[in-house]
Amino acid sequence: MKSKTSITLSEDLVLAIDALTPEGKSRSETIEQLLRESFAARERRARELEDLEAINRHASELNEEAEDVLSYQVET
Image (tube, rainbow, N blue to C red):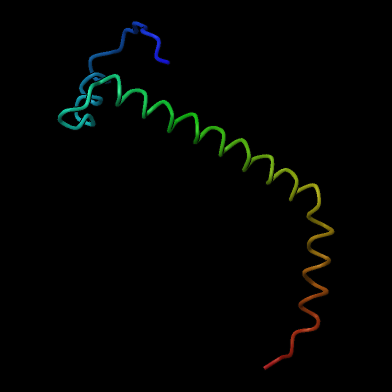
């Protein structure tokens, strides 16, 4: 379901949107696509930040495991 809304954008943004909008496609479609991509990127960044925080919380343990594994490597 779509909802109609009205927004006011600066002229430079409208020109940028127009430049990205393929022929036969509306500004609304382009704006919707850009918003979906932006929201997905924000969600991805939030998950990556959570992962990084978890890695950092367990860094010492992970480093010890890595050192243990490397100690079994055969020198060439």
